[in-house]
Length: 195
Image 1 (cartoon, rainbow, N blue to C red):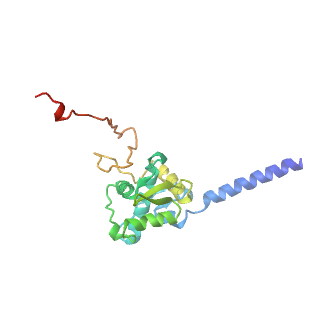
Image 2 (cartoon, helix red, strand yellow; image 1 turned 45 degrees about the vertical axis):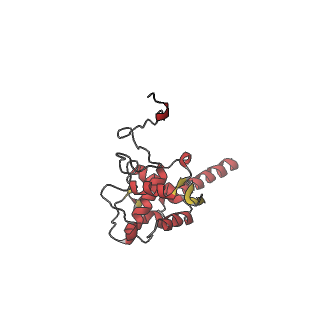
Image 3 (cartoon, helix red, strand yellow; image 1 turned 90 degrees about the horizontal axis):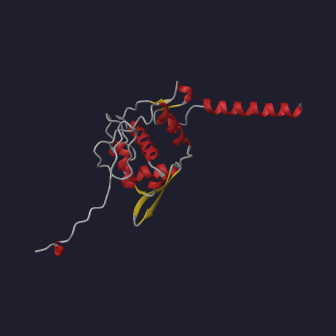
């Protein structure tokens, strides 16, 4: 009977710890990206005003998370400039991202900040900076993914029309998905054509 009471008390203590963790407000980094926690009225992504440098930083961070969410481990390593193109394509349709209007100012700075936060690991391969790994267990990334799903499955991802972005862009859903058939085509050299 005493062992059962101790087990019940331990289970209740664990449940209380989980409830307290769920009720804690999001971290400052997540709050700056405009992500509401579960205790903030259902979760989700809030609109961000990009007129200030802080707002532009928050939008860059949100788009960076959206691009990380789309990136698969099979696509790694990916060159930083190609990944940055995916970051730009992850913006909402009504927002223009301008790195010069943020506090980052340069692409290298945003990658170094995200690396210091533990989201990615960058490495120079053949004198080119590459994203070689993504920490999908990072608390900020997990909170973004949860808020993105609550907002309707990727609130910042724009529809990929036409292509042109290259790299690791994938189509999001079945309604707007596009398939590409890539095949090698060979042509005989003019040496082998009859005269």
